[in-house]
Amino acid sequence: MHFFGEKCNIIFAKKYVTIDNLVVEVKNASDLPYISVDMEEGLIIYRLKDLKASSVMSRLKASYGTLGFANDYNDNIGTLSKVQVTYNRLVMKELLVVVKGDIQPSGRIDITDIVKLCNKMFGKETLSQYQLL
Image: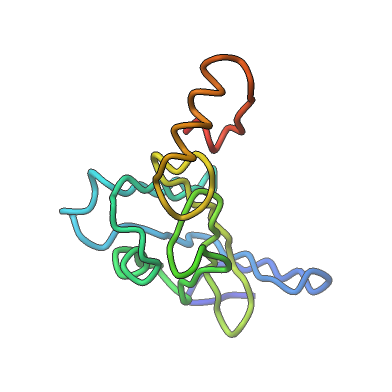
């Protein structure tokens, strides 16, 4: 089966479609120092203070489908938020968001993140690979 000239693998049991050459990227060159997308790891790494979900979404684009948040924190993005690329209501790809500084996933960078970092430094707590990023 072909979709926009690309090969498709359709997996009906899980109700999603994997399509070759899906690209999620940053729209504007001015945002490149602050946002990176790693499609292989399925990560969006975000380094800006503006954590509004709508603002983040306006900075990204997909080569096809629609970008949307699967979860957020009161309309903010945070570490472990998920961005989905959907087409015809099928989830094509899901990317995990890592927000630099949001160690305690909350969609805010605040004192709880500092406490988590201090606990890690003194060996009182372990952090996930995403929190360490």
